[in-house]
Image (cartoon, rainbow, N blue to C red; front, side, top):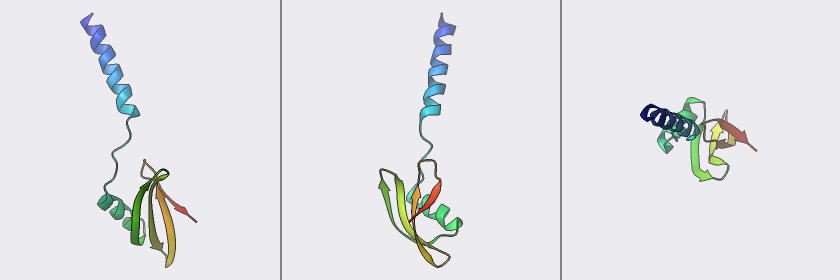
Length: 77
């Protein structure tokens, strides 16, 4: 009986852990990640419904960025 309860608890914790979002980046970590990806002059970092947004420069051109909860960076027009 105890083994079965323990098995259920371990299973529930495993499922809950898989469903939890990944560790969110701090603003400093995010800026460092963007710089490493070639972005400069990073500004206006904000949390929005679509993810974290920011403005930056890349290859001398202004870009608007959206960073999702997994850390994936996308350029938007």
